[in-house]
Picture 1 (cartoon, helix red, strand yellow):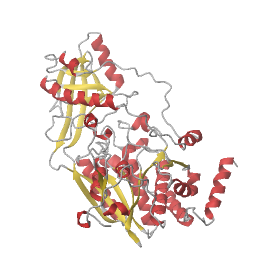
Picture 2 (cartoon, one colour):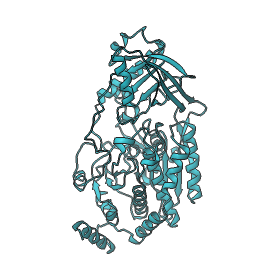
Picture 3 (cartoon, one colour):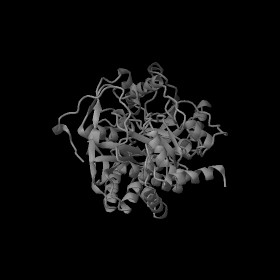
Length: 542
């Protein structure tokens, strides 16, 4: 037996002994039942398969996302959850696309792989045009092309180097990496810090170029995918705000095919393409929706434990790893608990968010409606950043009574990989609690608690108003290398056993939080909170 296996058995044996003093009690019988239901009767792949293969991509405001809202509500209700409903928030224009065909006519025939950027218009039927290549890094650069782009298809930039032979395509955390992650670092985990000034400059330029290309009567723009191997990475290009100019049809093309077009133009060879993009805006309902359902609590039913993930996606693939996977895991976790007919002390509430890809909009709206808001004036330098990068105000928190009733929120949104632990979000008081909850799950690979902070997803609005909110550590798999916002984000890239494991871990954490005598401890707010409003100013009392 390996040293690690022996240690895992020893920890399980220790966990089986009633814990005393300040140690956290864990109901090992219930953990066993959760594991048995999750591993022998899992429905997670059925759920994720319907969301991806049947419904498909789920852009916020699209008919597909509304279908996913309705289907998840009905599914949760069919499992016996209570109060299954949709909660709306103001969003803007919806968008969807049906077709994107790019055909090279000259110098030789070829079908090229390209996907339209979100919230950009279609071509209104097949359109042919000659191709030109531009290099625009500033508004001054754009002026050089005035009067030259009418009826042209515009390539945005030169060919890019696609040689990357040493890049690993599928990654799991090693023991050393988990050990390193457990040591605190002030920088956020996972992704390097963002160069905010560069991002703001790009955003300002994009806002300038949308009406510029319209005024110059360009037929469309095409840019090369930042990935290689035929992978097309695409997100938003136009605006979901009704009344704002969405620009001309804008596509992202597989890098290798884009490079061919760029090289032909560099040889002074005439290139002609035919584009047929069918995309449409949906203005009939400016509201987007979150799916909500509950397992009612008992003696502490006024307090709440929440778990969730975002249901919306981008459109190049079917939104499998980002984030039908997380949504299916959250749904499976509550299905497990409902199947076991548990009687939680606190109410367990699952939430499937919309508008995450546009800037955590659904979870932000929910937190503001139910729990509280931050005061203060946003930094004016933030207005030129994409919405998902803007920092929230850092003034006092105005709380609602339900702010005091939330024990925890657990989020899943880092792809298809198995859970390896949890980010404690700089909250030292929860670390020993999470360590105790993980002990009977060590043999599943979930071992690590880190005080480090991670960003980029729907636990952040909760954390911003002082609520205990956490994202799990997950194996990266091929999330960053292949699937994140790409045409490969499809069912085939999901890891079945990892999703089953993740649902078991999430169900155990949710149960533990719902049953412990006290709410989870909170990290002190950086700024003092404002007093809560009177009871009649609140919107919900669980």
